[in-house]
Length: 307
Length: 307
Image (cartoon, rainbow over all chains, first blue to last red):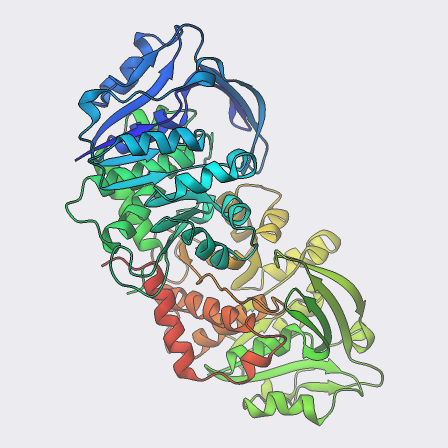
């Protein structure tokens, strides 16, 4: 099955204790589609500027990603700069030049209309909702958002959440969205806003999925996937989008859509996130093998497995 | 098999968003021994003042804990006060009256000398080392410490760590002790100081155990036990000590001392920590059943278990 991601393609400047890079290919849609491409056919809707050339296009093409939905606009591609300090948990944004991304109006190519899985990366909530409403064959919609929209456009975000099956956000965003500091209580409040399931990303501690009662089958409890503690974190940029790519990509590759599939998907999300941070930018995600992915999946599984 | 804990017995004043209590029984040795008492015979070495009466003694006795090592000194018992804000992750200490604990010189009753498992709760590192050196039948020593000793008595702590088999501390303490912000790298540095294994407690995210190469059997990777997200956290005081009690108590109850036992122990640690925080003080730990413990152990297991 194929999956469509709608989101940003960007050029990033990143500095971390491991070094610094400039003008590397980034953006949520880029990390997502590379990670998902190891599991299923990926389609991208995004906007880039005149500085996006054959070299960048090739990064997608080499992974078999359908780029017909990447629109070229007059001007420059979205640019972002960030610094990570020793603890690596949060980037300090040094600059954000939205450029062509400022007027982004997602256009869905006719050839994409039959897509059954959809991921709405972190863009303005009303645009997310518009895209969702245009996709009539969709079986499952994943969605990301951030503090900027939670605080800035709460009404619009609430409307979007009604259209979403799985929301993927982090601890802080969950608490902020719910206005509740206890994580499981906050999770239930978020689920009451619409999503069938909520994936809360805990960074180096893995992720937890909470389900609405009865959603995706039966079960009393949430499910948690750990991640292996990583000694060499070079660049955390894109970890969350790579997580989403592994999670949604694995789901789109499966016949069934049930809790057991979503649990495995949570592990694959962690696996892809852990690969992403090992090198600057998308370097690691460009050249993985399915064998490496399966090997790490087994390591993650054993990490919490009692005999 | 029996286990000896050496540490504080205290009276606590605690305030959290769920309410407040005054003069309740607390202290590391108290939480530890109650949690461990569900698995094995527990012995306590501690000091209390004249305000420690029959009521407090009964809390230990009811759980079959051997209190012959609790010394009565002239004066008042150690008193601590703390406030938890909304996020509950860290207590703001409102007062610390060491009282009789200030001159604590652990005395090991002759009847305790055959104890095979030892837990050195958070006290001055030189006292910890002295206790360890007096115990000649010990098969395994667990140890806790805190930022106060890591920064204040680093040389003494280093000497103690050479005598310890398993150190149980949190993320911040691990990074501080190692002088290294990456957690797995910090873990390896701490293991190089002496312990065979290091248990890093992540609070609501569970715990990870790192092993020295070859320690407790073979294995390439660390192991991680999750905890169930808890909706009703009333009082986080003693969670870490209850974790240690479940962890060490389970180990002491087993014939073998290998990685599989330590992995299960990590789950039991999480289970006991999760019970502790559900009520103020030791209330929940005083009246558990082994069935409740096993039931939660299964829930924790299923929390990350793929079919």
